Image 1 (cartoon, rainbow, N blue to C red):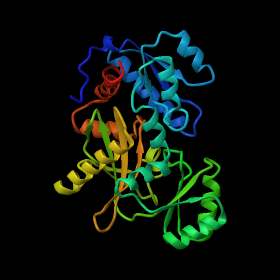
Image 2 (cartoon, helix red, strand yellow):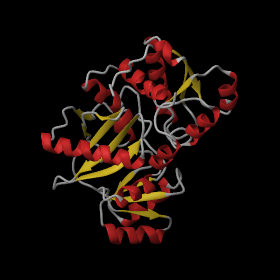
Image 3 (cartoon, rainbow, N blue to C red):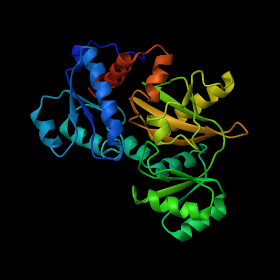
Image 4 (tube, rainbow, N blue to C red):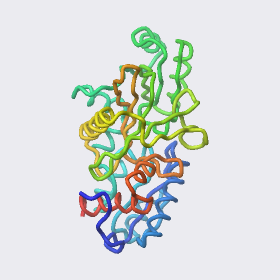
Length: 313
């Protein structure tokens, strides 16, 4: 399958770009949605935007919509609920289906699937009490990374080096999500790898002076480093791309996705998570990877949209 869309803009019909929503990632989604909408319109696609709110059902039934471009990050847009609603409404949409979206949004169950297939992911524990924190500290050691199980964009995440800090980070993360994970900290370089229309794009090496690639480093800071080529040897890059493909196949992603991976001091790769509706802002990583293979932003959004025509009619 070609990365580029082979369809004339008119073939997509009237396209609703769904963005905003009510999740903690709303500010990022607003930026992503604006960028996608502008690019589609620039390419000649008949596209309009919907800031998803309480009137969504009414708009889906009252507006003429031939397909939807989902740029909703986080719960309500990336977790299978929007995909299920669009399935029921008979509206083709971009990206992964209901099951893959719901699974990828749940970091714990994604890790359990990977573990069942022998794919490498950091050791972890679920936190629901002070006793859980103490047990995790004893079994996993420090440092550790705490994260809400159903949030993205590094929201609610914290690196900790003591039991007291772990308890505080768990309590803070629990404000975002009833399920909180703690993972073994992997010391080493971080990579993010985009997958588009079944092809794994060039990995991007990430560097930040922050303790980890947090929300500020992702969306606000100007000192985050992005390496394309990523700096790996040809053999290690091929290994990383093959691991990414297996990770996505395990979850069942479709159309486009982005996988985050750490590498330890021994060169071992460790899968962190899959994003099924990655960011599309001026700081985002999928557009960078696409540009490395010759796709400008307008090419990228049309390629993502083309999958909704080819896979879902």
